[in-house]
Image (cartoon, rainbow, N blue to C red; front, side):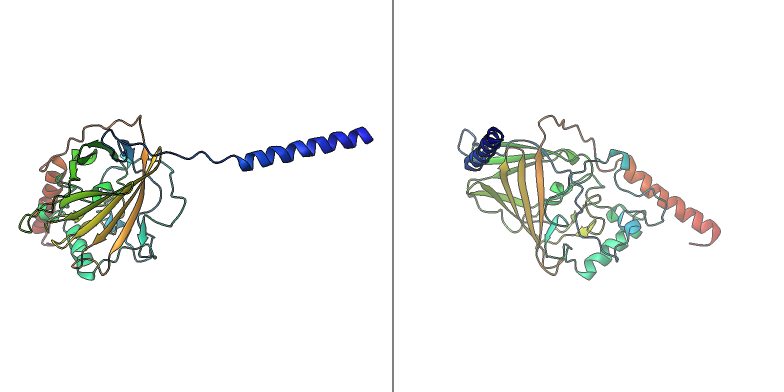
Length: 311
């Protein structure tokens, strides 16, 4: 019995020693890498697939309308469901990608929602009622970094004084200077604004101004409610890219447009490193068959309506 007690005591001491050793061992910390010219290294191929909703759902949402399916046919005008990624990634924290305001909803002005609704209901009437995404012009900034369900690959490249982002969707390439140059003059307005970057420690901060008023937050798959919300020339965006470990960049965008939103709002999205992800050509151009067929269907409806006297 005495030997059994000594054995039990020895085992207990061994367990305690192992536990203490594990406690005293510091957790392995990730050391940020740097480019040859000293920039924090953001390079690689990244994706933003996630099952976390863009906004907190609300009973007032109308899925059929916001999906571009005003007649309830199920055809819609957005990307086909079979192309949608089925990743089950969900953010560990938060109810939605919209993290501010606290309710997780984009604070859209009533007139902007009304314009969006009108254009979606009249999608077959004119090319002007289609978003810049559907017209293959651009998904916009920051909209191009919002999850889209498919084609969500991004390649980040860095060189002395610059960071470049190659977007898989609509094969856009964005070049961000880091040399402290001022924004272009106010008379110059572009779809995606004028980007100027700087480093705040290990965080890339990008300030974007000089937008035109022709684009929209074309987030067809990310948030049906926000799809086709217009932008004004007062749109101002501040993006932040911070690599937090080997395989993750924390991306944030603070969006402010006093003519469209009642308050600034923020989106937070993790970008996941995907070294085996292959970026394919996105062969999209304005005037493609999708746009032409949508408009021709509208003209067919008009003709049918005239023949029956119902339109």
